[in-house]
Image (cartoon, rainbow over all chains, first blue to last red; front, side, top):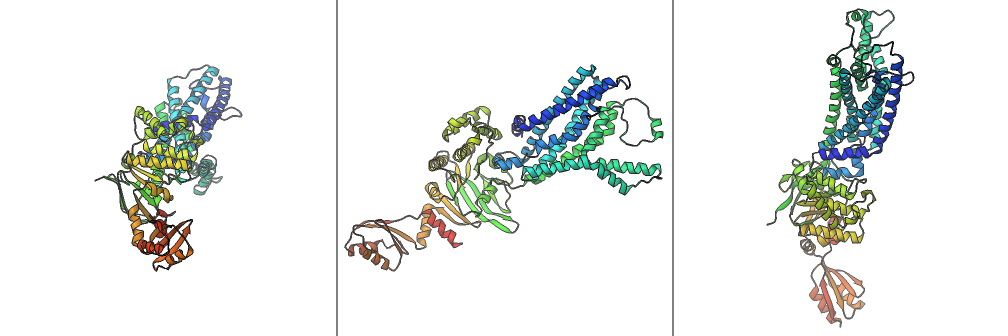
Amino acid sequence: MWTVFWKELADNFRSWRFFIIFVIICLAALSATYTAAQTIIENVTRTPTEFVFLRLFTTSGTTLPSFIFFLSFFGPLIGIIFGFDAINSERSRGTLSMVLSQPLYRDSLINGKFLAGLTTIAIIIASIILIISGLGYRMIGIMPDLAEVGRILVFFIICLLYVGFWLGLGILFSVLFRRAITSVLSTISIWLVFTLFISMIAGLAADRVAPVQDQSDVDAVLEHQRVQETTMRVSPTTLFGEATETVLNPGTRTLRGIVLVREVQGMIPGPLSLGQSLMLVWPHLVSLLTLTAICFAISYIRFMREEIRST
Amino acid sequence: MAQVMLEARQLTKAYNSTVVVDRLDLRIQEGEIYGFLGPNGAGKTTTILMFLGLTEPTSGEARIHGYDATRDATKVKRITGYLPENVGFYEDMTARENLKYVARLNSIPESEATQKIGDLLKLVGLADVANQEVGKYSKGMKQRLGIANVLIKEPRLVILDEPTTGIDPEGVNLILDLIVHMAREQGMAVLLCSHLLYQVQKICDRVGIIVDGKLVAEGSMQQMGQIMTGEGQHLLEVRVTQLDDKLIESISAIPTVRSVERLGDTLIIKSGEDITDKISRIVVDAGSLPLMIRAQDYTLEEIYMKYFREE
């Protein structure tokens, strides 16, 4: 498997797609950070001074969204681009038959390609985080403290889990479909559903299951909210968004959109420790991991016993 | 007693209700070149795929050097080289890089691999283009690279699917020489699939004809020829000092003669029985003298057509 891994990794770094993605994400990251830093500097007197560094990632400017919004929306595309033609390009180039007639287990091919893709993505994301940190430090003049560094590391891992899922999905479709165009269109359709349409679907579901009228009492409203949130969490984009918000905003203590006044009164103000923040989101991380595992399971089932012809 | 390298017992493959390979029994020994002939769609490639674990047999078993081809596929692939009909290489890598990748997949140590690759490239005549991208190679060059690819793991069994189809005559001879070298000098068992009967006839020790998934005839060239003679098809080539139509008439008059053809100054006579003696008598009686009377060996094409036409 490692032979496949190293070759695919080298191929990834030599490819056009790596170059283009890196340039785009660099530009997006730099512009998002620049406006975020500006906003932080302008509002420095009005906001608390803890965890300022983290706000580089989460603050949005007037016209540009924050960096994590950009990542939640376009991160999947990175995963998809590295995965959508993993297996079907080997088929169309005629090399699949050649490689599989060598003494290696078939799953090594999928695993090697996945790991190479994930490593490439990890290097890209890590570089971007470092670039943002560098630019941010330059602009706001504040170094991150240990707690912030810890949260940034956890953020990095959440990014990997998220993009890793989309990579796995891309590879799954590259196994299922013969032609790269079909696999890329299918994965992009799923991306659209999970990013754009999920909120509509969630709203519709909530309206059907737990409808709310003007005179409804608190419980009905809460129920509606609950159904909506749960449906939204079907989408990995929501899971990523909630997880990163919680990790990068230590003040986040609940994931619920509506919090009753009596509940707020019982809360102790102040930021959460990293462990406490993680307790809020561990289900999210496990779900992302499980989704990726399911993609792999289906890929294996399909690929392991498939007939491989050279023509 | 040479070792049996490949053994198929009642090997069957059916897609839904269509039986593509029907209870095939086959044995190939080391050092033997076995020709696998048959029309398109007869089941040759499917049989080969079953030998390599690239598809699963419906019933029956295939063993290569004792290993089960489906269950111990990796062990089989370690000792089997496969050159498919459309050999695929990574076009953006050079020949040397492609071979290095395959060597690594076969766990051949780096130093040994470099030496082997150099020798093999020389053997197949690609030494001076070894550092060019395979995308620029002609079909003949790719085919020769395919042979180098097959030999790099020093296999005990080599399976070639249409290795000379579409190659220029000079390239064909080079490839045929390489195949003979594999069997004679390196003691490999060779399974050769081809439509090009003349070439198969030149180098194969034994031949098997497969039609509609069944092995309808098998044997050495001599044995195959005897099948034809046994069926009452004798071919005589006759040259005489004085050739005229009267002589041809007298020969045609012999009851067992099926046809008499004149090619220049040679007569080709097809008869149900061996009539060499009768021909000599007739020639002398006609006032001529026989210069040459030769029983012609059957070409593989005639034998093949007989079975093909019978279906």
